[in-house]
Length: 526
Image (cartoon, rainbow, N blue to C red):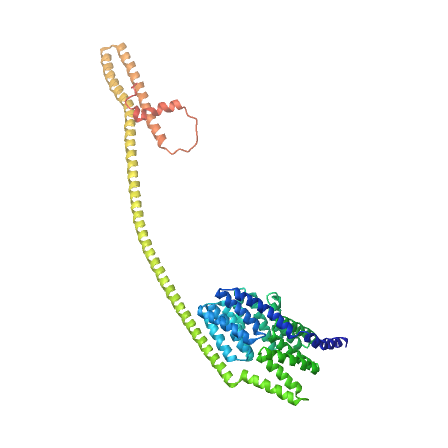
């Protein structure tokens, strides 16, 4: 009960707080900024800077004096066109489109915005493309086509985030929050509004919009006290920033809230303020909303006033949503969709050509690679064949060399064997010669001994017999010598057991020295 009482007191105090913020504060705030820009404009001779300054002056006049805004925009647009500044042309055309939308001239606004978007696209101006998207989204807001509005805002947000444009991104988040709030998707609305508020340092000129949307979300959730606080903050910031458009909208929101808690007088008070703000700035949507509320409020007790505001709202609606106006808008939308379809078809055709080109390039590349592989394979086969031939030639040469080597070794062996045989034959021949010689001499001595015996010369016969015995000993000696040579050769030819034995090296040398070829003919016969 206490909480409800505080809530009512808070709501009752709101009209007094808001009435303290009058048009004089708004006019003074805007006038100060405008005067500063006008002084800069007088001192500035560069056309680019002049366009930017006049754009700023027009922007400030949008929320307080529409005619002055359009006057400065038109001068800036003429300069941009004379100097062929595409960026300046799309900048001013987008701003003028926003003013026309504010006045309820939706067809003229959409036509101008679509032309501005085309220039920005043709010249590839990302900032201006995103800006045109945002203003086109506002048109769809007014036509209550919220999905289409969200589509355009998301396109703007994508560009702004890619270019790290925090201020524009904050505006995009705020617009998305408002769209989802209108669609009663309050969680999504809160998500985007909070993202916008995080960047409030670059969003300060539009902070009133955050408070308005957040107030609407809270009001729909039934949290009237916090909703009213947000409306109050939004209205204060709107008046400090000279924003009569948002002031008109917030007054309508507060009026609806007061009606929910049966505070009709306060509801009428804010509806009248909102209606006045809307008229002052030629804000058709604000005039319609607040006039409709007043018609509803006065319907039961003041029918004449109710009829007055009903007619005002009806006339404004007719100018905003009249048959001719809507038909023109539909034609513009259809034409733009046709252009987009044509662009999409061109894009698809271009992409298809790119795919075909890529496919052909890939195929050509594969053919080239295949040809190179084939050529390399043929060269490899040729090289392998040549290497095989060279290998066979080398192998045959090696085989011939081995055969020649074998023959040479065999020849050397045979030559060595011949020399060895000659040496052996010579060594064996010596003792054989001695045997033969001593045998012949012994035969002669025996014949001579027979003659002496016949003569009876016994002593002489004995002497001869002694010589014969000596010869026989020599024959035996040289026979054993030949036998030793043969025995040594046989031992040398036998496979050795590998067992090591003690050997008299002198005897061994004496034994084999006669067999060596280089000693042949040098050893004396004993």
